[in-house]
Amino acid sequence: MKRPSTKNLPIEARLLPFRCPCRSFKDVKVGEEAMLELPGMQSAVLLGVVVASFWLVYKLSEAAVDPLRSVPGPTLARLSRVWYLSQVRRGNFEKKNIELHEQYGPIVRISPDHYSLADPAAIKQVYRINSNFEKSAWYEAWKHPAPEQWTTFADRNVKRHADTRRRLQGLYAMSSVSQYEKFVDQTTEVLLSRMDDLAGNAQTINMTFWLQYYAFDVIGNITFSTPFGFLEKGEDIDNILVALENNLLYSTLVGIFPEWHPRLFQWLQKLPGSGAGARVKLLRFVADTISIKWAEKAQVGDSHDFLDRLMEINAKEPEKVTEYHIFAMVIGNVFAGSDTTAVSLSAVVYNLIRNPNVMQKLRQQIVDIEPTGKITWKQSQSMPYLLAVIKEALRVHPATGLPLWRVTPRGGAQILDRFFPAGSVVGINTWTMHYNQDVFGPDAQTFRPERWLTADAETLKEMNASYMPFGLGTRTCLGRHISTLEMCKLVPRLVVAYDFALAKPKKEWNTSNFWFVRPTDFHVYVTKRKSER
Ligand code: HEM
Image (cartoon, rainbow, N blue to C red; front, side, top):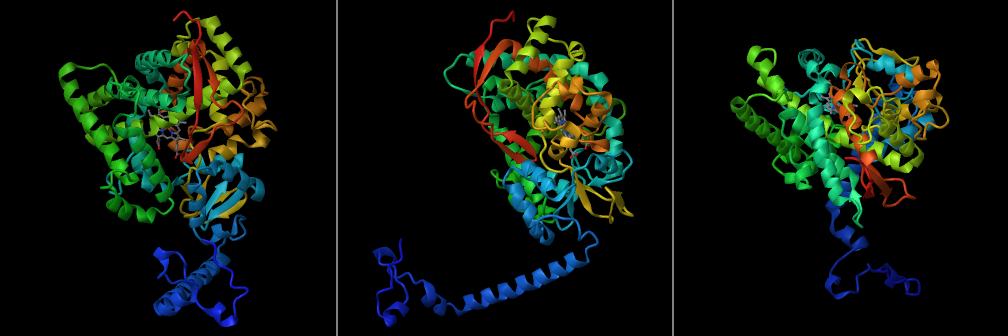
């Protein structure tokens, strides 16, 4: 309501407290009157101001003696992690991170002790094998707070993590990938039959949902020989995908203040809609699925899926692969392997739709080899254009959109001609590297698969060294070959079977970055092409 003007009233009347003229609020007091009746409020405000002043002086003096005080960055980032939190909460930090480096250079402070780096030289310094930079405390919020409940992705214990990888990486190795091909093929058939049902409809379809259902079902199939059933049902069964999203939100934001995680998790885990509640639901879902499948497998025999292979090793050498290892690996597959692949597949399809020439060229090359698009894994590995399209899509749209935070080891570290004392947190955001014009040229913003095929040897070496959609070093993605298998198998089928048109062709898609940079409005019209399927 507009406050009536007191301009023409006598001075005494103007000093009277304003009363709201509407009936229901007639006794509400505001302004000076309310203040006079609440002396405690004034004291509280005063106390707040005093505390804030002390905090500010303390923070400023801390900043003044900081050996890294000359590292540039937004002023508020010097004082507290709240600035970083407020930026990440907006859901587009990948873009902000690029802007920050354009403004401040290759090293930017984004909180009192967090430094974002964007220089190819820093990649080797931070992420090389034996660099001894452990993951930062941000990763704590990606696991249950109990120390013994580690998972591969979030484990900050360098020794234990290396030991787990040594025991289990064979299951994810390039040589194992062909064993999972049949599971991918089965799931691909289900997706295509669902797409056939939807094709030709006047309504658009949400491609991200379907690719997420696909990626999830593939992981279910590879891990347990049984897809979770998302594609069959055509819906988010038991709101598992919503739970994953809530979990992402919780871990991304709470990870910035990891000291709050144990307490917050304890309080929130009983609230099903909360991020912590979602995590508990997902852990229960995984644990239940493992026990059901374990019991079934004991009776039925093996089909050489992931769980079979883990159970086999467990039966022979129970101390090598314990039951906890099995639980942790399956969690890793479900948590790290579905959203990432769905985002990456979305990026491939989206960029193909937006670049009809690339779509046409790829389609022709696939059809020349196999008119149905049923390319084997082996064939796909000698299809340079297909591989370049996938590689370029993951360059322009890497699935993770926050810096991969690491802690400088004991003794500190020299990075980009600057000394970082031990305990400093440094990280590179994949987006800043992939859009680096010194490496990828002035058209770094453009989706151009040819760059991977035509660059000279020296440039190609530099591009590969700065290409990091699967992370780097000892913490590089375990499932990268599995996800490459999924993309190499599905993309040719989609390209041969359908024509796609964006619902809003003039607009770029919107995305939301809570660790994974997920498209939020990837709606397309799909029509079936004539093929020999
Ligand atoms: C295109 C799809 C994928 C992308 C873009 C991707 C990306 C990544 C990235 C960037 C990391 C490192 C994160 C960090 O340093 O903080 C990572 C780690 C990991 N990924 Fe993937 N990932 C994909 C698919 C998969 C799949 C299919 C699986 C499992 C079947 C998987 C399992 C893992 C695991 C277990 C880790 C932790 C590795 C470790 O810390 O040792 N990922 N992934």
